Length: 267
Image (tube, rainbow, N blue to C red; front, side, top):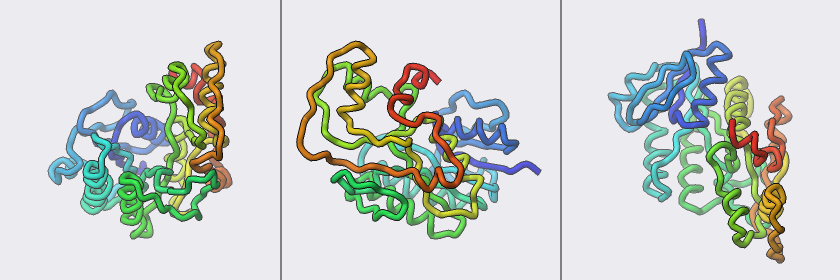
């Protein structure tokens, strides 16, 4: 019998995961308030995560559930409502056999260029970091819970750094970490295949880079003059993907050069 899976949050990332899992023969059901065109074979449900009636339209006791929803607003209330209240409600009502919460490297507070991995203390005190840390704790209360922390997602429609580079605004001396959305989806699917493995994973590309280097590479691709470096000690952190790679995962987009190449922004 085919595995049955649920994806809460069927945006770009969720739908890419759904496609990967259906190719592997899983029966996949997604939940999103506003339905997007779904891959062939995916059952898309329009509903509210906070409605028990809508959640009841999803399969209970599924083999796995991925929670990768995103909040409507960037504030503490919205983050807590989605990631803490929403995640807990979905998990407790649906009772999947295996649950994967998609989190963020924003849970780390290190800010002096340190390398961070799964063993590093997650001590961010920002509102998003606090909400995500609490949701992670709720997920990992159960032995079947897993957490995947993603660095900043690149890919189609994610043009913040490109716009910053082309506008020529001042670049910051800060470490940045990225993962292309297609690699993020493959990382989610990869962790689903390893339900008995480590409870905590990080997915990022192979190449943390200073923001100024990324912006100037983009500008070079558009025949623009480089921006001056800001000088001073670098802030931010560098994210290691060593655990995930050791388990057999490899990013297709190994650095910002691949992520911001034109082809990567179109598919």
